[in-house]
Image 1 (cartoon, rainbow, N blue to C red):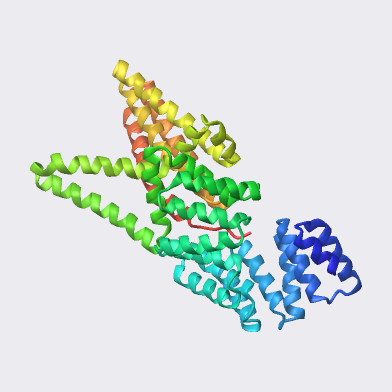
Image 2 (image 1 turned 180 degrees about the vertical axis):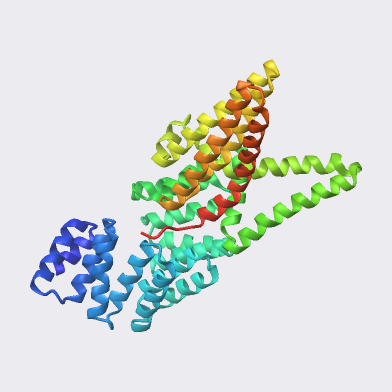
Length: 418
């Protein structure tokens, strides 16, 4: 048993799994071994088998806090967030003086965008262990989300002073500096986090954002993204719906008072451009990072693929637009509009979590591509009686591209269960 625990702490999960299986071969009713075997399997993404062993541990030892904590971890990994919260609450009830359990509770509240509850949970853990690294970092994260950047900076600074070799704390400091609009300083901490822990995904994502923030336009978009990330999901929807109603109201005013149109229409154009950029900015600037040696290395395979698709679609749109500028052929302008609007659902596909949300968005994007290219082909053929059909297909494509922003926003919040 002790050897299995030592291997688990060293992240040697396959060897640890073998040790715990040996323990269970001698004593199939050992709840402790079932719990840790489940955790080993979870690390290897074997979620169903992991759940079976951890649920067996809970059944065998319902008063063992560790079993409930392990149950919470596997449920959280599988995106069963509310059951994970109930499980960790049971672990805390059984063992309230364990700071690790309060850290786990705080992490779940952060996932639920309940910043105040996350802060309270982390602070309860720190009352038990004032130097608990995870609680300290989670406290700082919650404070950033609540807008208390100064307090977060002090918290992370104190944590770094105690342990300057902690990758999580450096990555946390980097993201706090991004929220403050200081990408260059943030980059230093992200680099240090990756030096200490080369596979730290949070630090890698931070480096990508810090590199893109060096572009003026993306720096504006990043501020918007980070501000929106601090809002609960319901508040985010209110902002989006408010923008939609605001556009409709301004259009109505422009129609009712034509003398105000020269002021209102530039505002509407700027808003439309900004709304479009909220969808395509991230993969578009990932495409620009492909020209940067370090940026190219920082991008994940998925980000590279997304930037490739966006690059091809944008190149087609610009080629069509250039063709129209030279020849004034209306079909070329239609092609520019098709490939330009197709950027929206295409970018939205890669914002969705892997699994059925991404497949659903990809399917919708494929249908829109078929409608748009079909309309373009019909209009290009210029056959008698087909213009109305082409126009109808293009109308459906345009409506679908606009609706894809709302559908995409809904799908990107979904965390498919594993």
